[in-house]
Amino acid sequence: MDVAVVSLGALLVAIIVSCTIRLHVGFLAIALAWIVGVYVAGMSPREVMGGFPTRLFLTLTGVTLLFSQAQANGTLDRIARKAVEYCRGNVGVMPMMFFVLSFLIASIGPGNIATVALIAPMGMAVAGQVGVPAFLMAIMVANGANAGSLSPIAPTGVIVNGVMAEIGLGGYEVLSYLNNMMAHAVIAFTAYFLFGGWRLLGRYHAGSVSMPGATAGADGDAPAGSEFTRAQWLTLGVIGTLVTGVVFFDVDVGLGAFTAAVVLSLLKAGDELEAVKIMPWRVIMLVCGVTVLISVLEATGGLDLFTRVLAGMSTPNTVTAIIAFSTGFVSIYSSTSGVVLPAFLPTVPGLAEQLGGVAPLAIASSMNVGAHLVDVAPLSTLGALCMAAAPASEDSRALFNKLLAWGFSMTVVGGFTCWLLFTVLRIGLG
Image (cartoon, rainbow, N blue to C red; front, side):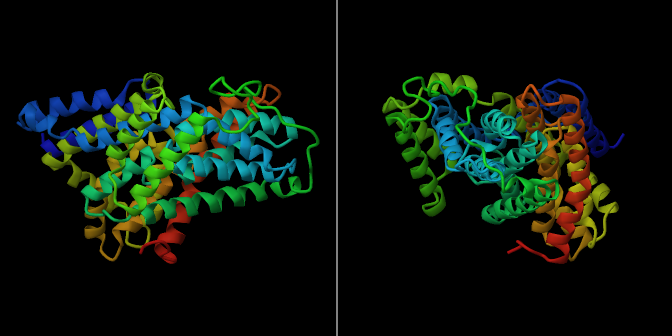
């Protein structure tokens, strides 16, 4: 049997398993890479292991270590509580504020999953108290976090930018971030007003709003409504310095994040032991394992075969829509950053070359946007976090059905949006 077919079959097995079984697909991908690479393709174990993305691993580890410290010492929690105070009781503004808050926090480093895990309990609690439909709050929180997910210093942004640099699309970090942000903002706010958010703007909630854990600060040393502590101010300062260095002085984000984390520990502003416990190790190894398998595909011709299959389904005028729909459909069941994007993005140069007349960035942006738009579905991590945080008074089955319908509808909406933005209007392509 053709080696390329076998290697592509191994990737499809990994994707199917990621959609159906609670098995760590990163570990499975490494095992499949070894079996296919060594015993089918005749590669040496050293060649297979050479596909491990050392730079990506260090970058992800450094970034998540730093922002796990910020989560552990209550800095991110305190930012969220302060933001709620600024709404001054306007019910209609609160969901929009949570979109902006989720976007900003995801953008400065924790990424979309950590941000929703932090913000969803607060947003859903507020929604229950002031009368905002939980469905609307879930859309705003999850899409806000996804809007910031491709920040150059966020985990998914690190993954996507790393893969794009390897395929010759380096230097588009800001455009990728802005394209994704624009799509999520347009769709989230359109849905918010379409589904009745405009009726909430004239309503005000008298009195205070309580949130989970409101009796004490997250770091246990100050009331939740008080000012930032010394440790939190230091954390904000260190993160701000890192962001400035990355944006203006070309500082390596991974190595800079390791250094920033060490500085916080030396200043007694962060606890690296606690941070290591809450780091997303599962996601980190998921991404690295799939990347090892992708490297075997590239070496055996499986990646070229995958590209030809995708190209056969598309034309220069429809490729952005079809790619966005395809990545979105798979992403409903699978990990966007760990499986879908590492598997699909390497096909971009081949697709652009075979179809002709299509900007590679348009295809890559369609993959990024399409895969993320569906993540509010309850089968995805972000949707599941919102479901788990819903008020006790909420009809969980009705909310599940609404979020599921939203997720599936986003495959079509994402396809149309990417076709309109990147094929018809050609927005955000440099």
